[in-house]
Length: 241
Image (tube, rainbow, N blue to C red):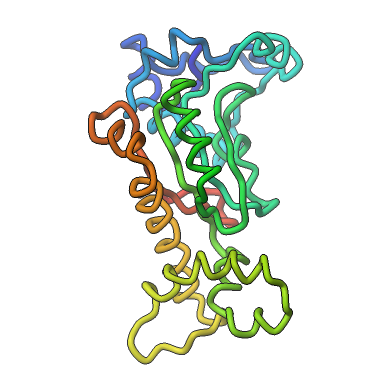
C-alpha cells in the first residue's frame, strides 16, 4: 500500500497508481504497509510529496488511524522504507508522528543536532543502496538546544564535558556561517539561532555528499535525493528546502 490521504496532491498520485490511496473510512484502522513493489515504483518526487502531505495531515490533526499491531505482524518478514531521516535527539520531534508514517515506512537516525558521522552515513548507504529507500531527509528543528549550545560554545566548555564539546565543535561551522559582521555570539539572539539551525542542516547535507561517493553518485543519477527541512516546535509544520 501507499499511504492513505485526503490531500489533492496525493490524490493525483493515487490516480496514476503511484501514490497514497484515499483515506480510510472514519473509525477504520489501516493495517496497510509499504510493499517492495510500491517502494520500487515510487519516484523520488513522489516520496517527497508523500512526506510533505503526511506533515500537512499532522498539522491539520487528520492523521491516518493505523493498526500498529497488524503492521508489526505484517512487517516482521521484511521492510521496504521509502526514506531515511536524520533527526535531532529532541524528544519533541517524533519523526514518524510528525510525518504521519507507519511502521516500516522510514529509517530514522537520531543524534543531538542532527549531524552526520561515518556510522550514520554508512547507515544511509545501507538504507538506500541495499534497502531501496529513495530519499534522505536531514531534519532540524526550531529552538534546537544543540545549536544553541554551539552558539554559546565558550560558556558550555566551562562545564567540562569532553564529548559534548566535540559535538558542539561539529556544529560550530554552521554557527560561524550564520554569524553576521559585528553580531554578538549569543543564543539569546533568536535570528542568529534560526539561521544557524538552517545552516547546520545545509552543512550536514553537504558533508553527507562529500563523505559518500556512493550517495553522491545516486543523487547525481536521480535515484536518491538528499533534502533538508526544519520542524517548527510551535506549529508542527516542516519548512522544506
